Image (cartoon, rainbow, N blue to C red; front, side, top):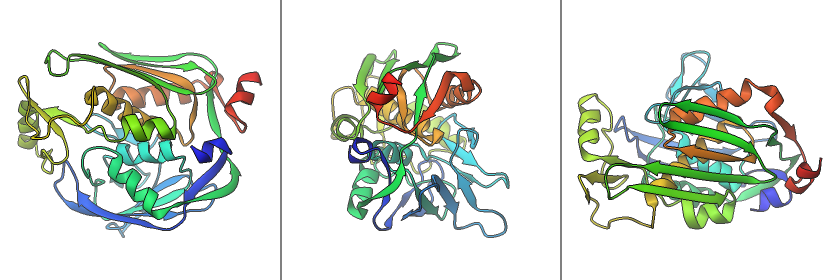
Length: 299
């Protein structure tokens, strides 16, 4: 992962453009990811809104609704949802500074994974920036729980992740993934894992005016013990791999890569954001470091 190996920030070499459908709104949206100078961070702009501030800088505090997806909002009430898959691609590829323009209320779902976004960014190319990467080093455990869902951040000298899910449906069952979060692992084991849902839940969401853009083209759909997608799964344990993908995106709202271990059990976007807010509320539990992971351990 080149931006982390030399520990400098990274932006895009050229703009990256794509279009697609929002999974909940069903609306077609156009997305443009533009290079940005050091210090910008990840900033989304709702280009369809012109009567108030349409810039939404990403931060842990900006996340306002994390039930079905990760939604952010600025001080003027401008919102954008389903940012997690693009955020995961930014995190894994070491993208620190970009402006993301979108002409609707939701990012396109693409194929339900992060792979199309990774391919989009790859085509645009990357540019090394002079500023060093700021890492968030976890100094002491931070835990959150919501019923049988939990997440914890633990001190480590590198970014690690363990995720466990447990579903009654045998087609999913109990699945665990445990890995080092780096670009190579993300590309080979995580980025292609698609979002998933149950047929009866999809119908209930549609009745509530959601999942209007959801289809077998952008999600794995389970009905009883059957996977409805003609091609089946893309990989072993695709379900838990996608939950890990979501967590990588959800944690990158912190604005920097972690030096720590995330462990999630049945955790979704809401629990992940609760963990982000718990971390930010405990300044003694973390610090920003500008050095290699090896030095951070020794320091």
